[in-house]
Amino acid sequence: MKLKVKTNKNSYSVIVGKNLCSKIDKIIFKEGIRSQKFLLIYDSKVPTQMIKSILRRFNKKEIEKKKIVFNEKSKNLKTVSSIIKILEEKNFSRNDCLISVGGGICGDVSGFASSIFKRGLNFINLPTTLLSQVDSSIGGKTGINSLSGKNMIGSFYQPSLVISDINFLKSLPRKEMICGYAEILKHSLIKNEIFFKFLKRNFIKILNHNHKLLERAIYKSCIIKKEVVEKDEKEKNIRKVLNLGHTFAHAYEATIGYNKRLNHGEAVLLGIMSAVEFSHQKNILKKDDYKQIHDHLKKLNYYNLNRYFKSNDISKIIFYMKQDKKNKDNKINLILLKGIAKPLLNKSFKGNSIKSFLKNLIY
Ligand SMILES: NC(=O)c1ccc[n+]([C@@H]2O[C@H](COP(=O)([O-])OP(=O)(O)OC[C@H]3O[C@@H](n4cnc5c(N)ncnc54)[C@H](O)[C@@H]3O)[C@@H](O)[C@H]2O)c1
Ligand SMILES: [Zn+2]
Image 1 (cartoon, rainbow, N blue to C red):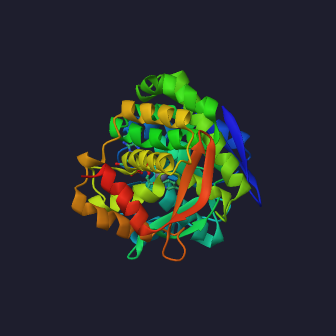
Image 2: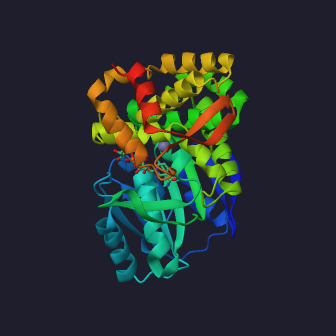
Image 3: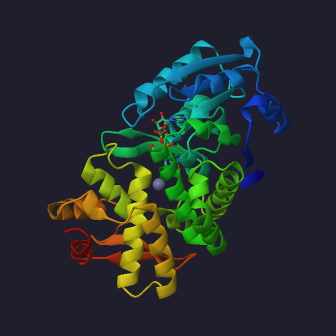
């Protein structure tokens, strides 16, 4: 399955399917990329046989490779420098190409390195986690962490091609599958009720790697992200809907201290739950839709904030919610829902109002 993402200056294909790595050379050629040299940057956890199946499709002379241990700590300038060093040593020109094979971190770092090397090197992204296949590989945001926080240094830089091979997901831990599912669910809730119903019927099979359903879920999800991004590449307004659940989620992650106990996607599920409960309490969300979303989140088993937080964490959560980039005038800006596929943007609330709301959920 293939879709085209159109941006202000150009367009690129996103290809979703099985066994794509074993014909990567043909795909690259068909997509019109004519680079002479390639640098393959890959995440150390991607199975070796997948990397080998890619390398086999190139002449030894035309491809360099570097394995990197990617995590939020190595999502930094030092890693970017180590990539650029190879590009310089091997005399890459801007018509040559960097290929990223890894999750969202690998893609964000490699994309950023590509965007600054000689002001823009061809960049092909092969996302290997569900989250990166449905979310971070589309939209052109690249970046690294800095002292002031996550993703604080970066650029908008569109790839030349995205290849999402679902074979990569076979080795992905279930927790990471849930993480990607959270963003798929988010996409359905902001844009497509039929897709939400499809997810409700099929989520167990999707999480258990049913090929057809998984491929369909990834493809549909990419289409929704593409449509939003095409309307608002630089996040001036509409693109904010992609933040559904994220103001809460970022604060939950920060309060826990960014550790494995609650990864980003799990925090997003709790964040969606919170945004949905808040919308319900404020009589913004249609009752029937509330019930449907509520039932689905319950089945996913991400409904209980008490499992992660104590009542004395609430002030910390509010503190982090106030740091959100969308906020103005010391109020907290939330993306809420009027119904399934009916998001409500730019609603702001006082910290105290959210504090008393959270007191009902965390006790
Ligand atoms: N650019 C964007 O628009 C955007 C959007 C959302 C998230 N992000 C960023 O993406 C990052 C999260 O991405 P992620 O969830 O993919 O995390 P990740 O890149 O850390 O990958 C998750 C884990 O899976 C491992 N892994 C990767 N591929 C694997 C495979 N095939 N088999 C087994 N293990 C594998 C990784 O080593 C890591 O331990 C965050 O840094 C976030 O800021 C960016
Ligand atoms: Zn997210």
